[in-house]
Amino acid sequence: MNATASTTLALALAALLGAGACGFKTAPRPPEHTAPVIPGALEAALTVDGVRLSWQRAENSADGQALYDLAAFRVERSSGNSAFETVATVEVTDAERVRQSSEFSFTDTEAGLGRKRYRVSAVSADGQQGPPIGPVAVTLGGPAAASD
Image (cartoon, rainbow, N blue to C red; front, side, top):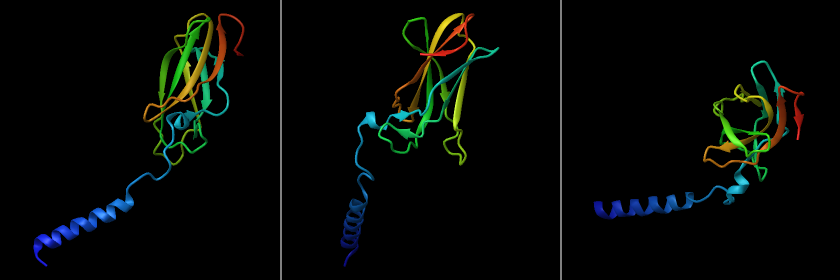
């Protein structure tokens, strides 16, 4: 066998072996099924620094499968009955650690006076945003926190 024939045979064999290993590891999932879901409830507390929000880590996607690409949480606030606006993004920086944080928090130091509503959504590494938890309402300069 000459060099050209053995090179061709080697390339054909490599392509054949590679074809068996390509493809999806699992069945494709619609994007809405891969959205990260935060378990539990959003909690709010008035502190001397502002409104402290706390929530649990998103560990599963909407279809119940384990979540491996949690990237951030989006915190949104509404004043009175106005639309929600993003006030913070809390980055998830412990994805590579063995012991990951089970709870996250954010303190809104710029809430101002009056009734505020908050909600939080988890965001995956590819930008897929899950459903929000909340809203939870607080009144600054008035009665303590109450949940909607």
